[in-house]
Length: 233
Picture (cartoon, rainbow, N blue to C red):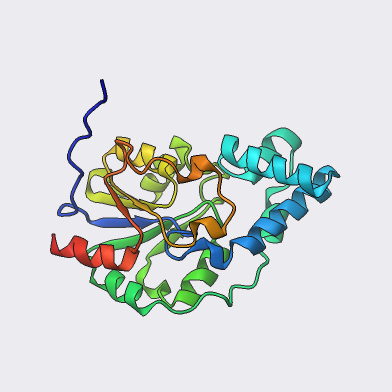
């Protein structure tokens, strides 16, 4: 017998709004090919393997460890600083200002924070290109997480402690369902963001699953409009 999903949590108690970065605040196909290519190039050079084998390793580690970097660190002792500098050395110019999202963020009551498996430098470049950087209090990145990526529970615990966030008074916005399991368990209201362009980026089936999962309170393909509606509810 299927388990009945409980009513989705609302936003009336939310004081802290927590956002993933890539593919949440903007459609990742605008930048992802650059990052994806650089990750694969790094894996190929570091492991001295073909591009096809690098692709396989890249996706395998991403699924099993949360990030390709974590897999390379665990199994091959890669230098995380060198890896992060290399893979995020990209052109951010394809991103354009998003005034609708900026207006929606402006109206949200309370604090706004970024929780990303990327770096502060990459997040800062993205937020500036979107012209929404002024709305965010801080960026909690993979370095602040001691290189432990989402969906590891310790990452969320470190984030909540660092920024003194009460999970039952917070909302989490993410593009991967599995990254919302721990936040929901902790008491956060969860939102799965599925922007357009999902198939323009290579995404495996598991990355697109989970829209109807019990730990997903809400699903949207238009973040700005969703935030506007959330304030009216």
